[in-house]
Length: 257
Ligand SMILES: NC(=O)c1ccc[n+]([C@@H]2O[C@H](COP(=O)([O-])OP(=O)(O)OC[C@H]3O[C@@H](n4cnc5c(N)ncnc54)[C@H](OP(=O)(O)O)[C@@H]3O)[C@@H](O)[C@H]2O)c1
View 1 (tube, protein in one colour):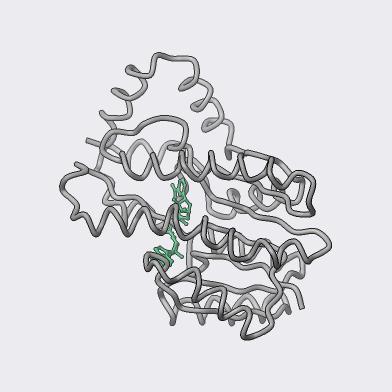
View 2 (view 1 turned 120 degrees about the horizontal axis):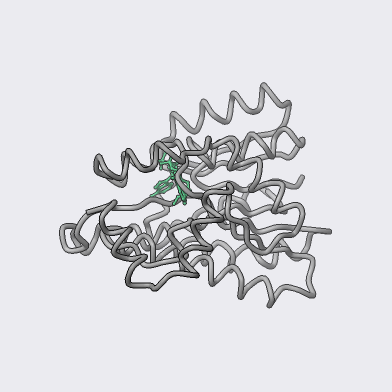
């Protein structure tokens, strides 16, 4: 039986992506740290959409997490045809205010675990008739963001990696899509400890997780390479490309400092 594996599916964009996929009658494997929350999300989705949903509580900041997820799938004969690398978070403020471990953990979740999951699952994805990798990047991938420096760099990494991998897999059955949401109304801002100015800016342009998920899943099935969600965010990325880097970075700095 084929499944979509969604990381960070306990809430926010990941949960909304899981619901989108379930509405298309796709069976799900959900991964996040919060076991109880994940269990209730899995139960609700299974009942509402009449699909099979399994879940695995796992901390993807652990270096061995991707292997644990992969081993769980192999042990249970879960065949993956869609891999959604959505789990991720930011930490705002001065880079040096966080411990090396805190910054490393974020890089592990945002970059290393997704890459490892792609690597481990690729042979399985290639066995399917048609399969997909959906990596969630961010509008922060398009510029350096002072006071969100590591986060923005990690998203630039995943965007670039996705585009490269897509070309490598062009002649295979595996399609790779990177989706870059802008501000989305989730718990992201809480974990990232975004300050008042950032919160007010986000409020003006926030999209819902459902709207982002709908666009992400649609783009994935359409085989798109890279999608920025929402007109304002697309315009923002265009302006970033157009304007002097220093000016763009100083503007972002005023929002997050
Ligand atoms: N919201 C935005 O404005 C925004 C904008 C651009 C990009 N994004 C990206 O969208 C993705 C989803 O974020 P969101 O906005 O939906 O945030 P969210 O509501 O905070 O959800 C984050 C998800 O990731 C999971 N997660 C976090 N750390 C984890 C870990 N160490 N191990 C396993 N799972 C972990 C969380 O589950 P647990 O806490 O249960 O582990 C949760 O399911 C992220 O990659 C984020 O960078 C968000």
